[in-house]
Length: 269
Length: 340
Figure 1: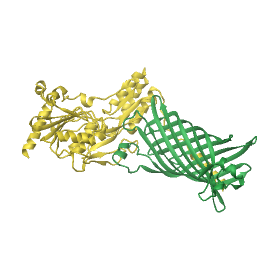
Figure 2 (figure 1 turned 30 degrees about the vertical axis):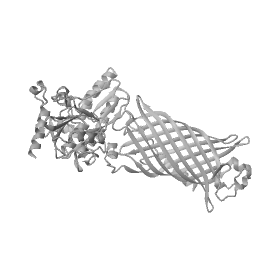
Figure 3 (figure 1 turned 135 degrees about the vertical axis):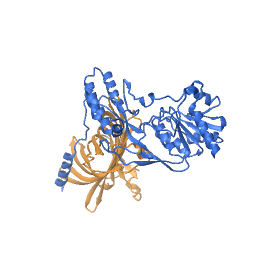
Figure 4 (figure 1 turned 45 degrees about the vertical axis):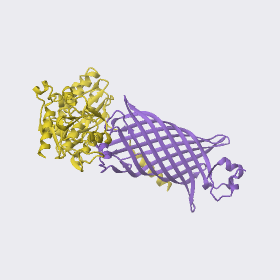
C-alpha cells in the first residue's frame, strides 16, 4: 500500500519514518531533438523532434550493513526526423533496472556507483520505402551506471541536482545481415545470425541525464535534460539515434505501508 | 574503489566514438557518387550482369561522373542518373524525385505484347465473375479461365476458395497472369499455395552479406506450403508474357515447380531481385534489387523464365479476335483430360 508523504507527515514524526519504505516516483514529459542515421534505410542523418515521456522510481534497500539505492526507469520517445523531403518516424522505448551503492564524498555530495540491466526496443519507419520501410531495434544490455547527487539550500528550501551516466558494457541486440530483408526474417523465418553480442566496440552507446529537483509548496518540480546516444555498427550497418530531451514534471515521495502495520501508522484520523 | 570505477568509466567514454557514415556532398558529382556507391555496395546483380552482358560498373562511373559534372540543372542531373541506372537493365531499379521516376522498360517493351484485353473480353463474355480482383469464368468444353492482373493486394483464402468452388466442375484451369507487373511477394505465395497439397521446394533466396559484388549468404530454400481452404490439383496452364514481372515472375517460378502446372506463352519479364530503397544527399530516393531469388535449380530468373511451351499471339488470330494462347491452353487441358 502506498500513501503520499503528506499523509504520513500529519500523524507521525519524521523520525518514525522508515527510510527503506520511502519511494520517490516521478513522471516527466517533454520534447526531444532527434538525429537519426540508419544505413539500412539511408546513409544520411535525419533531424527532427519528438515527444519523450519518462517514469522513474527510486527506493532504498539494505543488505546487512550495506545500503543500496534501486532505480527503475522507463523512457519512450516518439518523433519524426527528416532529410530533405524524406521522413523517418522514430519510436524507441527502454526500461532500466539499476542498483547503486552510495558513497558520501563530503558535505552535500554523494556519488553512487552501480550496474543496471537495460532492455530497449523500437523502430525507425520510412513511409516512402515499399519493401524495407522499417529498421527494428531490440536489445538487452548490462550497463555500468553512476550518479552524482548534490543537495543545496536556497533560502530555506532544499534543492537537489543529480547527474547520471549509463554506459552499456555487454549485451545482445538484433541486427539483420547487411542486405537481408525483413521478409526473409519475419516472412520466411530465416533468423540465422540476427542476434549479436553487443559491446562498446560495436555498440558504443551511453546516456547522460541531469536532473534538478525544485521544492514547491506541495510537491517537487523536476526539470531534466537527457542525452541518449544509441549507436551500433554491425554487419556494416551503421546506426545512431541521438536524442536530446528536455523534460519537466513532478516527483512525489510516497511511504510504503505494509499490510500488518497498525492503522495508526498511516490513518490521518 | 571509486577511483577505479571512475577511471574505467572515463576510459569507456573516451573509447565511445561517434558512429557516422561517409557522406557525399550535395553537389551533382556528390549525388552521382552516392548513387553509384549504393548500387556498387548494395545492388545484388552486378556480378550477374557482368557475366550476362559484360557490365563494368567502374566504367559506368567514369562515363557518367563527367556528365554529372557538366549538368546544367537538377532536371538534367536526374536524367543523367536515370540513364546510369538503366545500364543495369533492371525494372526494379528506379530513381524518384520531384522530376518523376526513372524506369527501365526494355524488359517488356522490346518484345511482342502477346495480350489484348479487347480479345480477352471475347472469352470472358458477359457472365464472368470478379472476386478479389480475379476475373473468372467457364469457357467452352468446361475449361476454367481466371485472370490475375496484379499481386498488389493480398488475397483472402475464402475468396480463393469461393472461386475454386465455382470452377470445381471444370476439367482444368487456364490461369492467365499476362501483363501482371507484380506487387507483393506474399500475395503471390499465398495464391500459389492453393495449388499444392504438400510442402514443395520451389527455389532459393539469398541476400548480400557485405559490400563486395559477390558477398552473398548461402541460398536458403523456399518452400510452398498448402494454403488454407480449397486446393486446385487438376491441370493448370499458366499463361505468361513479357509483362509478367517481379512478384508475378516469382509466382511463375513457384507454379513451375508444381507437377500439374504447364507454363505456356512467352518468356516472363523477370525481376527476381527483391527491391530495397535508400536515398541520396539531395533527398532523391533510389530503389534497387537487393535479394536475388533463384529457381529450384539455383538459376537466376532476373531476366525472365522460359515457358514450358512457347506460344505467341498470331496476327491472324489477333485480327479475328482470337487469343492464340488461350486457345492453345484449352487444347492442352482437353488433351490432358482425355489422356487421363
